[in-house]
Every structure is written in structure tokens, then in C-alpha cells.
Length: 105
Image (tube, rainbow, N blue to C red; front, side, top):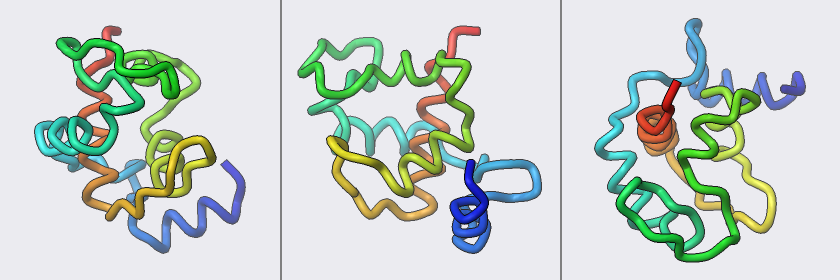
């Protein structure tokens, strides 16, 4: 992560001494993902593929290169084709918590 982004995340409260906001509510994140993310991503095991625009959340969760911090940073400032959703810190924490539940390791 570049230094500027780290400063922005710290200032914005997305990071704590122990890492990204880890007190997210996975169930709230799942509900949010079903409303906002499911058009482009498979967000739950029981969802069928809707499009091939975005990777399934399980793939993101199990990618060793994707830490909770990198997922939170991406959600805070995504690049196209993902739209900027203007998520709150709580929503980002909730989405990260939901994505964490999809890890299989």
C-alpha cells in the first residue's frame, strides 16, 4: 500500500492498531452485498452467476494477495469498472467481515 493511501485510511478510521476495521457485522455486509454488489459479483454460495464483470466474493476471500486491509482500501477507492459507491467506514467493515466468512482456509 502506498504511503498516501495509508495516511488517508488512518485518518478516515478504516485502520486501527490491529489492522482494518475488524468489528464489521458480517450479516449486515451480506445484506449490503446482496443489494449493491450482486449484479456484478457472486456474493453468496447460493447465488448464481449474474455477470462476469467482477470476481466472486469467495475468490476474493481466498486470494492470498487480498488482505482485509487491501479489500478495505479497494472498497474505499475502487478503480473502474467498479463504480465508486461512497461507502461509509461501517459499510466497508461490514463488507470485509462478510467476505472473510467466505474464506475456506
